[in-house]
Length: 142
Image (cartoon, rainbow, N blue to C red; front, side):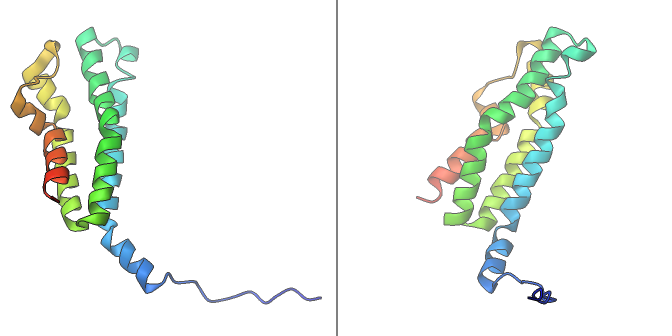
């Protein structure tokens, strides 16, 4: 018996698969951006205690990272459901806005909340991205 000949052709995804990949590349990039932001927020919390930070700094760092993780299931699932069933382009815009607002979370906390914690006035709920994301993905499709 002889070994089968090696195939020299490469397998290209079908046109349908290529179209789906192209359509969902925006939400995929938003997901990658969320992951990178989370990785940058991660050292703020766990390492604050290792460098001798004061209690308000530890709380600020922990809440910056953990708040993002707490909202991950809601944000990522709503992003992808909206992208698949409503509009990938709109999901990309919403997700990009969410990430931009989420990146301001530690800044808003530090500038307006200080040692007392996040300034949870009604308008800050939207600044942190949660309200805008929830409202848009639940109300707009209706």
